[in-house]
Each structure stands twice: as structure tokens, then as C-alpha cells.
Image 1 (cartoon, rainbow, N blue to C red):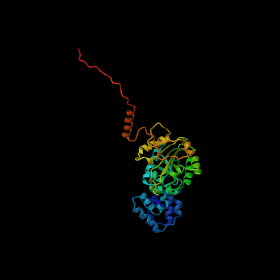
Image 2 (cartoon, rainbow, N blue to C red):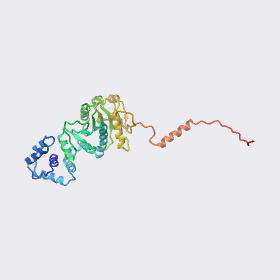
Image 3 (cartoon, rainbow, N blue to C red):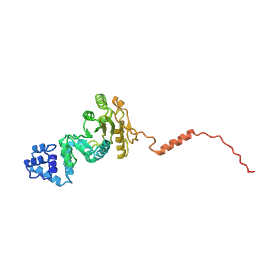
Image 4 (cartoon, rainbow, N blue to C red):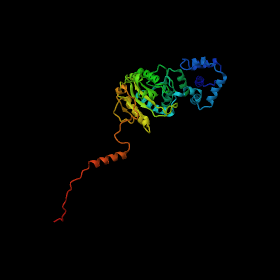
Amino acid sequence: MVTLLCWHVLTGEELGGTSLGQRVRRAEQFDPDDVSLLREIRRLQASNAVLTYVDDLVEASFGPPDALARLERGRLKRVQGVRELTPAAVELLGWIVGAAATHLGQEPVVMRADDSLVALDIAAACELDIVSDNRALRRRAVIRGIPVREPTVRSGISVSSFVGLGISETLDGADDVVIALDDGDIALVVGPVAALSDELAGTLQQRRAKTLRVGNLVAAIQLPRGLWREAHRQSLAVWICLGGANAQRPWVADLGAVADLERSDIAADVAGALAQTEDRAFRYARRVDLASVRAAGSVVPRGVRAPTLREPDPSAHLDRVHAATLTTTSPLKPLDVLVAPSP
């Protein structure tokens, strides 16, 4: 269905009444290098009822992206829904990617999206071009109007989602991403908090420590609960990695411990972590020693947040000041002054 919908979008023609030969010839015109569609069209035998269904779906939708969304709300969603994130999660990850794109300071910023539909959502939110080796992902990008660059174009940012996978699979995927980073490139790794943040033991802890030893992790963020559709009570975590960073004191933050999140503050914290500088005040993150994390313990301790210089409640701080003054107060020796009429 997605392949036929992509053909419909590329050619701008209806599918109903077309033969396989006609569809192949049109695919050869619009995808001559066979980067996303041609070989699938050659192998796809579809009945006229299926072709008409795709035409009717487009006609009843608010454009191709809406048609794709409707299509994936059915059987396809049941297959892929285990890895789907909520709009709030996509928005939050978009803030992080936007800050990373600003840090790169190059135009245009191209994002690599190999196997993650989440990456397409983020690319659409941040208005970024993508590059991908995944043909199915490229077809979905065409339908959604996301510019797809040649596979040989160098990308500065990559997003890899391991949501819905087990701890071992997530660690393997994260290791591949972190080790393969070129100097100056940025990678976001999204996965279950049990793998990327919580304390591990035995061989799992050793495998994560080996990945962290590379020194590319500059920030680790635990996201609030409720961002994963399949399991609202389970939290997700994000690793922000920078190629060649050699970071020994990454920043960590538990956003689940914060009531209200501000886009500008999150962007500033991400920018500061990527710049590896303390010449700014961090709103949510604080630094930890990577050596202690590798030895044992969690990457993002529960409830960790940036250090503050005052009490969150000003009245409590005022009470403390008053108590201190009462403790240090001592009686003064009286001083007598003689008052008499002037001569």
C-alpha cells in the first residue's frame, strides 16, 4: 500500500485502471536511479480493487501525509505501533535536534535516518532534509514531503530509535552508533531507560561501560513518562553523542523531575553540553564523572537536576535567614545619654 501511495505521489496520477507495465514505465521516469521505488513496483502485482482503494484513500484525505497516517492507523500500525512515540515526545526530541542543528552551524543540515520512523517525525518538525539507506523510509519521506538527499551526502546529525527493543539489543545498537561517529558529527540515541540510564549488572554493565569508554557521550537525558504509546508508565532516555568529544564529565538530567519544561532552556542546556563548556548556567543538567558511571551505577540518577543557589520557595529561604539572625543575636550594652537645658 505504501509503495502504491508513493507512486501516486511521485507521478501525480491515479492508479485505478493502470497495468503493471504502465506503472513500471512511470516509475522508471520518476525514479530512474532506483533509489526508492522502481524495483518494488516491478515486483508488485496489485488488483484493480487495491489500486482503486489507494486512489479513494488519497481523495478522502487531507493530502498524502494524511493518507499515509490513515493507512498506518490500520494493520500497519499494529505491526509498527510498538515503537511509536506520542506527539509530545516528537516535539521534545525536535527541540533537542534543533539545538544540535544550530550547534553545527552549517547550511543545510542533513539528518541521517536509517531505520526509524521517529526520525521522519523529527525531520518534519525541524524542517530538515534526510539521507537514508532504507528504501521504505525514503518512500515514506517522499509521501510526507520531506526532502531526501542522495545517500552519498554527508549528514551531520543522526537519530536512532531503539524504543520497544530489549536491553541487550539496545546496547548493541547504541554501541554501533557511538563507535561509528565521525569527528564533529552528532547522534541521538533514543531507547528504554532500563538500557540507557538505569543501573545494570554483570555483562550488561560491562557492555555499556565499553561503549561509554569511547568518550562520545556528552549528555544523557531521562525523559518524562507517558511518551511511549505502547507503555505509558515506562520512561525513555536519550543519549546525545558528539564524535571525537573525548568527554569524561557528561551532563545528565532527569526531565521527569521537572514540572514545566521550557524549549529555550532545553536548547541552551543541549548547546552547552555539545560545546562542552561551563561558561553558562544550566537549567536542568549537571555534570557527572564518567569513570564512576562506567564502574557501576546509573547513567542518569533518579531526580538529578542542575544545582541551585537558592530554595525553590522564597518564603522558606526567608525563614532560614530569620532563624539565623535569632541564633546570632546578642544583647547590646546600654548607653546612657545625659540631656540638659542649653546654657
